[in-house]
Image: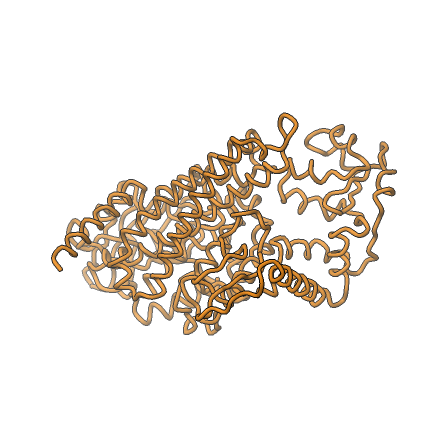
Length: 581
């Protein structure tokens, strides 16, 4: 059982209430709140918390009268209808004066105000977990004992919107996950809810966290024992010196990417890990020992950032057509690099660039990989503003007569095509994990909004046309998730060579299926939200942002058209191979 299960806002709530740990906990009855409904003395209740808005009404973006008529009331439902979580994080601590007596918020604040707050919180959720287990057993009898160590009837986890999380989060059995995955899921979600999710809107509007990008956040991610998961199994202990979760496998990595993507921003997800997850593996798998020792530990501890540079203004999915050149100097000690790379994720914040260059003739056989460093003379970067993924640090990079030591060659000269292809399956698989969670976020946000928004006298969700939209989203998401987990299982049971031979076509097809599912869900969610999803910020913030991010998942990593063609060609190859058996 999952004794540490909790709502996704648990860590955020604990942080909010920690400010009152040394103060007297103030509670009020609703009768007392109702008396404060006059000019200069206005209180409202939101989710069991009491706020004094007397001095805030004039600053309210929607006008003072909108708030004035609600003074003395519980406005929880109306608040949820128009505001995102960022509003509470910004104004809540300043305006909160107490709690409604007996409310869940008051009880949570009481636990947080104790000297042993963390222990009290753990006891509460452990007790809650046992109660849920008892309820489930009374309904269905004791859970059966499987032959293997797999999940059978775990407690529900998350915000519990039906299909708002993968099936195994919501009491369904799974052959893929074990107790170690449950514990890892909780660790990843709690970390994101504390360190990332509250700041997503700010980072997007500012095109990133600041001049250093995400380095301080990545360093915290390493400090808390999560960061090394970004390069997938096996856990890279020899580079970081710390242990990962027990039996770390591809499902741990899937959980890690999935929980990171719950923030509802492709820009932030890519900003954190978009460059590292695809730029570092070539160094780990093919770099010299000297290069690995020099580069890998710094990146996996968050001290340095690396990115992958393949795409050029004239070469996207057609990797073999790239034109950036690397010619050996007469002394034989350097490669002199000239060319440009475009749409490079994390480029403006990166210290290292894993760069595909042409060292030989035309086509795939003339490509090599070089590690270029930011402080090398002739390297320049320019931030690019794009339709979506604003916070990802999308970059245009110029290389002008850059002298790169031959020791920075990754692998062998003119073997870069092989290394790029070796990397693609993992990159595309990671994009699928992100894309399906973003589709699920769109669905979840739409479901919650449709449950509280009323039209023609009843909630949106009571209209058949709205339920049909939600049902279409569910069936697309769940079918794609099942395919993803089936392919992930293959990753846990095959070596790299077998994966690349057998799974490339299927992963390419699933990437297209996932991006089309994401696009569908973003559109339908926006239709359900109406004008609220056409506005930056507010209750439709995630859907509006994700709608702009769709193209970043339908094109990079292999466009839908290229992926469909590749997948079908691989199927033909397999058929011909089997026919010869």
